[in-house]
Image (cartoon, rainbow over the protein chains, first blue to last red):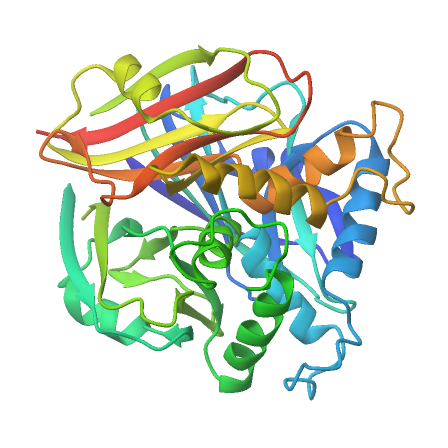
Length: 138
Length: 138
Length: 138
């Protein structure tokens, strides 16, 4: 059994945002066993799993990743679309455009501390489209 | 329905290369709904999704990733296979060896600007083998 | 056909560890064709694929990743859980919490040099839980 749901995330500011509940509300009933893939249709945003409790983790993600891939990198050639564009592309491939999570007994089988992050790498990224694909059986 | 296709990529020079069309030509008819996984059977190359239009993005990937994981890193111990070998292994795990893309209405459901990159991290990587697994239903 | 196996990895010291054999022993008979997903239920450890022969590769991973995401990063705010905690979260998202490997003729279709790494990013990470999901057909 394969099912797809496409949805749009609201516009988030640049940074890392917990979207686990938002995603779950859009998926409907999950199969007994399977896998959920979330896929973001963009090259300047990403999806990842990380700590779901303390907002300071998401702040440190933003600080560190900005230092790792700086906007003023003197050797970048692709600069016409704004100083945050090329860093956003690089972060997107370092973090990844999709996450896959096992489904067990009709629930996402995340660890206690795992949540789903939207990683918004641009200052004005706007709405982001996500394709959720559920492969499962009852 | 699960189907696999194995193919070899031509030898690319070190850098980031758009292979979306090449891959699609090898897959045959896609199911109505599902997921395509592309898996590269190597530890010094990678696959990722990123901007499919402006070649300067791929050039900046090459520049930045070489600076991030430099060949002359003084603390590397694994140096016998060439100065580009250990950086290639690290980049492969940072970028990843596989990408998964949703299939919708018999097409890859990529965003407008998303393309599939082969990331060739070695100067003489040679041909690279890819296993494509299609899980879908009509 | 979808099957899940959950298992616990023994406590490994901080670093990169080859777990291919350990994992295979827990999976039972694999289907003829399909995909194995391994998912680690933690935010301070990761899973990746890389070189399966020379232990110096895993040592260089540890050296390089510690330099890339240092413990004494002065701009980290999330420091209460130990100096290795925030770096562990960041490494987990850079490397990833899951790997997916094609299954062909009842075997993992890894390349000759590919092995599965547990990436233990904490000094006292303890046991780590992994959910293996096998999607396949005979």
